[in-house]
Image 1 (cartoon, one colour):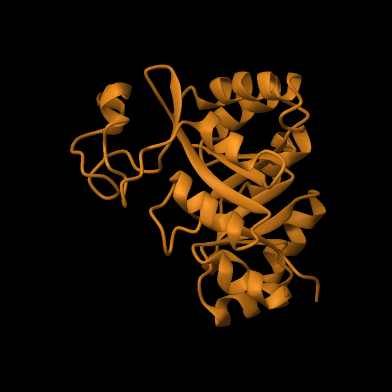
Image 2 (cartoon, rainbow, N blue to C red):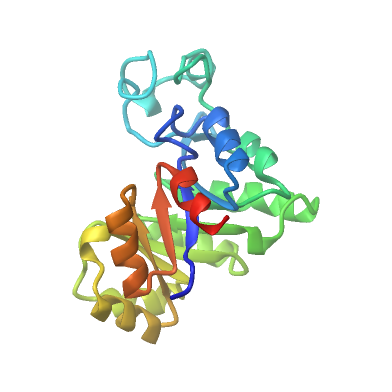
Length: 232
């Protein structure tokens, strides 16, 4: 039974404010070699934030997309942390961890490709250090056209009937599925298309053991320290 990739989901988000520099720093300190984040466009800038609205994770109110960037940067995202820009998180990760960037909104495929192009040119990141993923297959396809050298992953909350076709069309390195959807048959089908299966979000030992037994290649977890300790 091979050891899966442990991906810190929005950083060490079970113990620290999600998608903040603090959460990503703590994931690195726990030994994480991969972490996942969400990116959205606000005023032409890529911010690291998951929800459409601000209430759950900040002291702000209203929709993220309707809030000027300058105001967003003044909000408390937990423990005094600010909503980071994507380039700030990537600067923290450079040379220390690989990053799964989830494209959360319209325009993020093109904007993320432009940002990465600059980082690759400056040798601050290598294409192998990045995995781009999305529920929005249109954004993933735009990203693919602009950054074919970067690995891609399709995300599904439910299994589509045309899953194999979509994985082939997008040339996905991996497919990211809710843990309840993963079976031996799904893993075999994905493998036939050259795709690895990653499971989200895995926080309990019993879930981890079941999924590893099935052969998942990676797990997203809010508590990376729980599973990283197993390999030490």
